[in-house]
Every structure is written in C-alpha cells, then in structure tokens.
Length: 114
Ligand SMILES: [Zn+2]
Image (cartoon, rainbow, N blue to C red; front, side):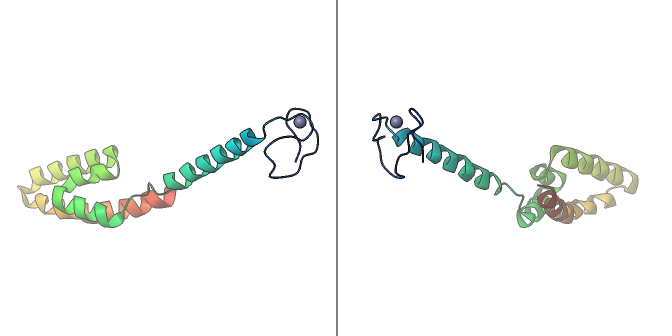
C-alpha cells in the first residue's frame, strides 16, 4: 500500500509510515466505516415483510392488519370491506378473513419487489 501523505511505499499492516511517520491507523478506520456501512446494508435487507405475520395480523385485525404491508393496501381493503358489508348486509364482513390471505400474498409480493 501507499502512504496517503507522502505516497511512499509502506508495508501492509504497519501503523506508521516509515518515510514520514504518518499514522496509517486512520486508513483502518476508513475500512472499518466501510465495513459498518456494508453491515447496515445487509441488515436493511432483513426489513422484509413476514408473510406469516401478515396473515396473523390480517386474521386478527382485518384491513387494519394490512397496515403492516402498506397504508394504501390497508385503506383499499378497508373501503372494499365496508362496501361489501354495506351491499350484502353484513355478509361481506366474512371477507375480513380474506385480509389474512391478502396480507400473506401481499407480503410475499412485497419481498419480491424489495
Ligand atoms: Zn509517508
């Protein structure tokens, strides 16, 4: 590697440049920061939606459970459910449980896109 200050060739792993005495420890800090950012990247990959949890939330909370996937989806499902409940006189509320399956597949779909 090269010393960042005087550009002299220095042996990999030494802490100070043999030519100018520049502390090369800072270089290691940069590498550490890069390592950290790559770690953050991999942990952000774990922000996938769990289809199992989406199913559970949809089953318990119906359209509200879909908030786990997205606000838009939850709102859409809520309006649809309210509409069906109105025109079927309550029978449409059985669609409540369809939200569980909706959430399950929406989570899988979400994971494919992210
Ligand atoms: Zn140097």
